[in-house]
Length: 136
Image 1 (cartoon, one colour):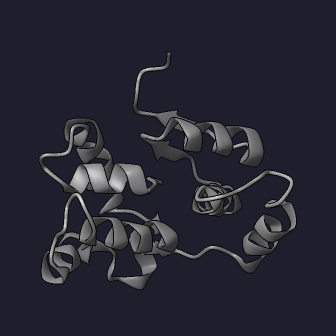
Image 2 (cartoon, one colour):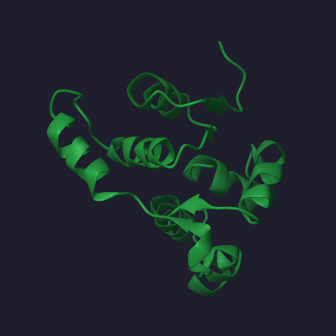
Image 3 (cartoon, helix red, strand yellow):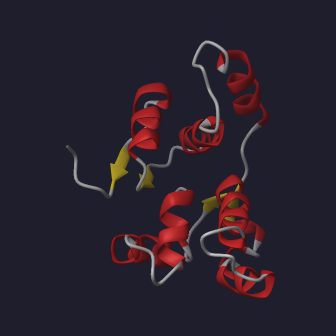
């Protein structure tokens, strides 16, 4: 599965990582994506720096209008985040952990462009994670 960083980069042709992300978005268009990734992608594409209109965003995300292509986050993942959020000092990365837990709960690997997400998914969720960026 892909996360929001890959979804946005793969959909925006002038994104600096478009060429890295596009094949993964194309593959995901034939498969499944966590619902939280679709929602986050909608929000990211509508705000700066992309500022895309709602019609364009809806068209870009149209492969996932079929419910069978959306993977739901289980209530247990939200409960886990609420129980551990304080000790993990979660902030904006709460969504990253929910995406990782969704992948974990469905037995699916994660592809990301976000180093922080890659570390979080590997360390906290025990996921097989592919970081598209070179490691440092």
